[in-house]
Image (cartoon, rainbow, N blue to C red; front, top):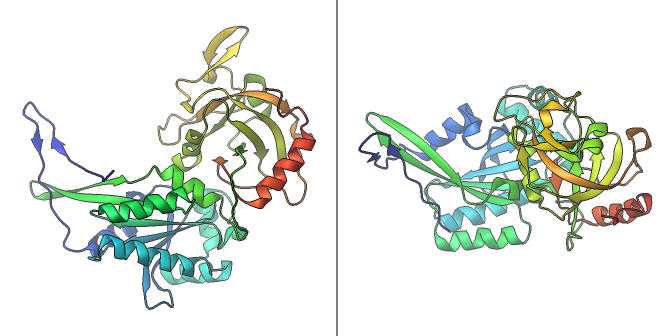
Length: 357
């Protein structure tokens, strides 16, 4: 489905704004550097016009809160098919980067800056160099995408390649120009695909979801008592909850603690303003019962909840935290790597009632 964008001036007689154009796509790159939220408010730009060694330069390199890399390529007059092919070629360069190389790229982009220090200041968590270079995604920024390129992107996406297209349009509003953008695919899909790549070959997904729960004052005891998982503090953290649907099984890990429970999803992702829990047979707003967690009013940082029917849980001090178990900073993901299948085998022995709901 090709992306179509229109903007209308609000009034009794709505007026459609005419399309405009930027002087060059260099102008768009400058805008993204100045305001990275044009592409995502959850990414930090760390590199620009880096030599790949393949007779080319990447346009922009960003990093996400889980330390995964984001290769951003602007169309720049190339045909859509050419830019897709070139982005994939450049991704092979990204795949060869190690932590030291990424740190040097950032030091060139921001003279002498320390990536680990700035990453922690930006995201509030430490940089995880273990994900380099295996977790990365490709984002193509273009004014238009032809049908052939869309088919290529869809084909790669179905095969768990983390690739997406951000389509932008410029509109004229008097003497001003307005910029609109829309994703070809839900960004949650490419985020999830990026989160489950590794140096090991992928295999078929086993149907089991991984969930990371905790931080920001969230209480595992309350999650068990009222039957939920939650995430917030930014759309990057809460959006992957949308991957879950009733009937899905989730295995929950508290970061730096271990696996603490398994259960079945019994509802869809719901914002804090609408989520209800059962107390003495009555449905009450979740905000009325949470003693440990101050829910934010900011819509962008709002907490989102998913109802869970727990099959088996353990207290935090009894968490399963063996060497070699799968771990990831994304709130929800569907790993297709051998490590996850091995993890599930071990967790099924640790939680023998896992299939009781």
